[in-house]
Length: 108
Image (cartoon, rainbow, N blue to C red; front, side, top):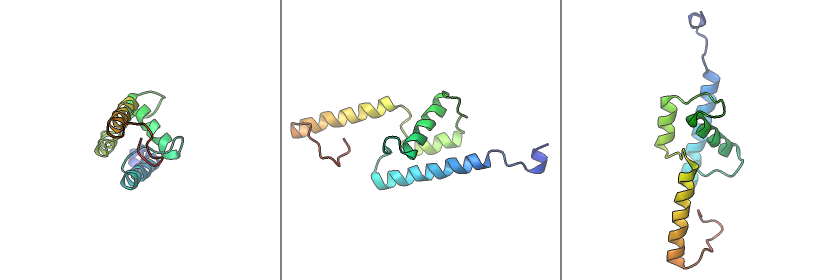
């Protein structure tokens, strides 16, 4: 019956997701990575995306399209992977410079 009257199934939710996704794309374009400031709205949104993918927290699952879009921008689904990546960067920094004193604005 609702289809008969062109009920907008999830239109607002889809629009909100697309808007936040575009914000994430812009963030990556401007910063070269997806590590938003801790507890910022973009950081929280990324955490929700991880929960949705893992099926935890009672979140509505992603569509295949949403997963593809996030994969296309190298979204890190597993934060342990991100930690390991940063650890390897730190190891390389130490080898190159002989210390751990990275500049404040570095990616480390």
